[in-house]
Image (tube, rainbow, N blue to C red; front, side, top):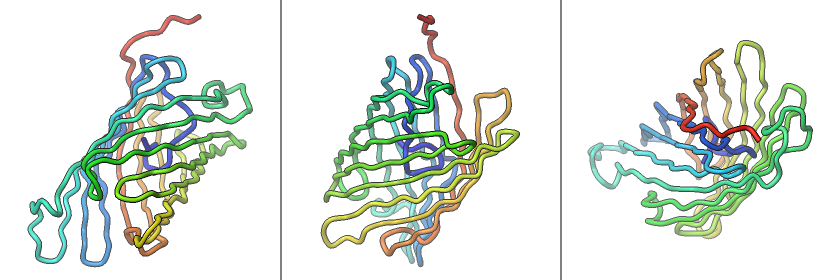
Length: 232
């Protein structure tokens, strides 16, 4: 699923035997009299074969609106999903000496979301280095209770000491009476030197009526090696 702290994904996949846990420690949404907490939000990514990745994601949301009890099932719920991702064009994310973009397609299913018990999505993602800037572009289709077109663009500026300012513009076009959603995110990602660990801190601002006014995010990403694949 999404690359922390973004809604978009990248054009790469995990190497065979490598796993990544993206842990959303705290996510707070503010919109008028509604406060929603998503804690935790977890994505587990696993490199299954060469150029193929599978993953599992889940989140539990706790919302408080007006005088409703925070444990009311209407406002407190969890959902999960699965996906598979295939790198159709290996590029700069797979080999730093290559200048062509990395392109991947991703398809998945979601279960027990706030809108429907079942949903499906597919998207194509591309990533490319432009000097010290890593750019990601996404375009896809999502269906739960209604069809939606999803899109996103990310810029990561890689600086010294593992620090990366990031910005993302993302949204979805809804068909039907529901408003479309658009938002912009600004944040920082810090990769800990010599350790497969990074932290992220970001704020997302809604640009449309269908998006939360503000969302604040804090999380971490950890990489592990489950098995070793011999070099060819």
